[in-house]
Length: 573
Image (cartoon, rainbow, N blue to C red):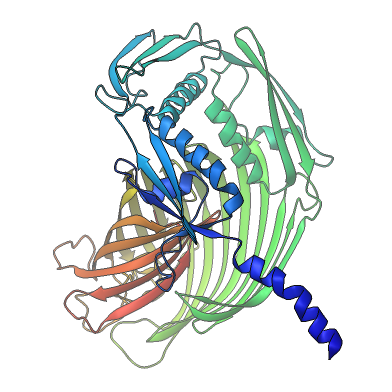
């Protein structure tokens, strides 16, 4: 008992000190700059918007108050307020910084002398408040533009002449870009077991090609896509107008990956899964993978094999990769179930802003109806179809794009008596457009599909359906069938699926989204005359390094009782 009391008496003063070792910092008098800007730039955080039980004040250690005052003063100067005066008032449990911003420094004129069009990169305007941070960003943007356009010997002189007495600043930008530079020697140092040809197939530049820093940066991504390296180093050595590059790659120490667990997928419900893959299988960055999945609507066994740089396209600097996918799947629909044994062969290339996928699919499909419903065909189907897909991707990021457009064109077809039971042709075109201004992002997507059967009927699962996280979000996955069919959940032969979405950040990595989806499906080929099913809804986005985590709730405009909840990882645009 005595020991406990002694221990308490020793710790009690420390406890009191800990309780009183902070004060609240308040900001007053600010006009041009918001409190959130101020707190963020001096390294303090306010309680989150949802923490309503906490005071909207920042806690600070009293020992750093003076340094915070100095930081705040420097921040205001960097924002163009050279006459700012910050007074400090110390209270019992708080410190108040009162800000007298004074008159800001205004840009009087901007003078540009350049043999390259710079106006679009200089985002300052006459009469605007001068900000040091923005001036530095403009200089950085000019340097990146020069290197991306191949001018590695440019000469940039950017000056800001500030007159504090008159509160004005004059900006001068002088640029001479000289002659363009070109890539010279390319030295490749791959790890043991990986040939230079495989590495070269991922390079987005070649010798004697015009130099571009952007192509070097994107090459990091294409080399990473091989999943065969733990480290990638690209160094450059400039010699007058030639830029030599050295690429050094470090082998992956743990090439085998195993995953087993349970989860939830919007399209298929609760699932259990097993995934195994081997990177750099037998060398040259080959991949071997196996997947098992069991869910409420799907049973899947899948094997994949990938071989990079199978051959070089004659006359072009492109290499074709080989991929084979063999699978057995059992899918459960509302009115029927399908068993499918399939093999799909790919010859593909992915080169900067476009990709091509050519190949053929072989499928044996068995359909069993739950009841005699409409015109769903039961029985066995054998399909063989060549296909082609071409993608043009001009987005600024594939993981979480903010600007750009995307166009995907896909076509497949089979001929009866040439290994296929059905003669048909199927085409899908999908376009995406995304634009961001003032952190407000607007994205649109449109998908149009047409299917024509010339001889006999395709199995139901090869027709068009809609609904789900990537389609009309008032409905669950593939819940929407042809509108003009005698019964529901029957596939269509014409599809139009549109989406428009707006999103804006609300707190740190979280964003709020509002969306509108419109879908039309007809059982007839090239029939675009039907009314659309419209859905509206809202969602939350959480940005991660692998793309946004999305949670959406969508409602049918005409039937509010019809709604669906969706969860997905990855960008839809």
